[in-house]
Length: 423
Ligand SMILES: Cc1cc2nc3c(=O)[nH]c(=O)nc-3n(C[C@H](O)[C@H](O)[C@H](O)COP(=O)(O)OP(=O)(O)OC[C@H]3O[C@@H](n4cnc5c(N)ncnc54)[C@H](O)[C@@H]3O)c2cc1C
Image 1 (cartoon, rainbow, N blue to C red):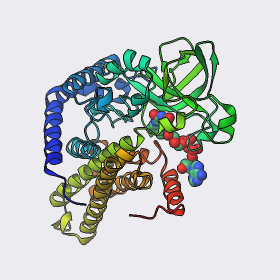
Image 2: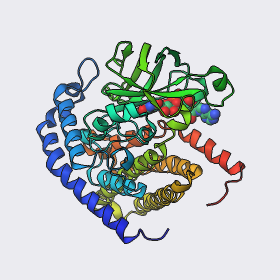
Image 3: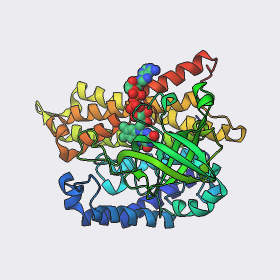
């Protein structure tokens, strides 16, 4: 990969400096104010599994200010009012944030079981690329508030019987007059407890669906309307709660034009923005791994055993070196793939194989680096104080959502066997 062009480097630097300044002035003081609640999950969540009002308000405040400052929607398409920043910038920005702050910053997300952040909207909670294909009604009524960070969305595709195998969806929508009526259950939906709107994917043409030729449609559902139940929240990976829950839809009526994309082409639409989203999350994972390596280097220099710093023991040096090798590989794999996304965009092509390689490799790499960091820290690595165990939990979580590691390998192998063997 060649070095990033000067104008891109300027955008990256300006964006990183700006957002770190924003975090320091708008986020850190709020975290300080609520530090007692943030430090104890029993205080953080109410009996309903939702964040307590103080923290919800704080997150809303951050999101709204981030919207006004232009960070919340900076990676969304300009055609819907977003900042339209190039995909490589999202990798650099997320990397910088997670390297600097690590896990454990609830208001920034990725901590205590959360994977959304009120700082930057993503395809699971904010102004997704899907909105570029929304009807005029949605673009007028909904998109401006989502771009501004006043309202949030969730992406409701997975169901109890359909995760990797989406051809097993059971949620259905039928047309009645000038409305659609939706019935079904969505599960493991990030931001479902808080979202104002849900992008719900339902089967609309049984015949096409049975032949795996389409047959699903994306609808925008107002989560406050009758028939929508978002009260179930799942505790995840040792946490008391999370931001991930289910959505039960019973005879939910949606206006005819509250559709995202074309009727019966929902799966195509659901992939929009996922590529960019996966690469942005990869940037976050990369930053998290770098943060864990930074902590490991510091500790290895400081902690002494057998009369010498850990850093002088070859076994420890090798762990540091192995992490550096993997981080370097992961970083340039992700950045080159982001360049390909940009290069291919005018032709409508997507570097599918490469995005799957990034999703599988970077998330797995982060797990290995965090695990080594814990090993280097000994018992200290396991203490909740260091944040390393939280980093490992985050990295571990990421091998499942947004396409498991196995599904990525399935995609990669499928592409190879169809002749896509260029690297
Ligand atoms: C924290 C979190 C957030 C999420 N957020 C969202 C969201 O916002 N919106 C949304 O729609 N969904 C979301 N999901 C759901 C997520 O996309 C699914 O969990 C994921 O796609 C896997 O589906 P599953 O859990 O049903 O596992 P399954 O599909 O049942 O798979 C179980 C295991 O079998 C493996 N497997 C399955 N089929 C094969 C095969 N053919 N070959 C080899 N191995 C196979 C899988 O890789 C996995 O290891 C989220 C999940 C989590 C954990």
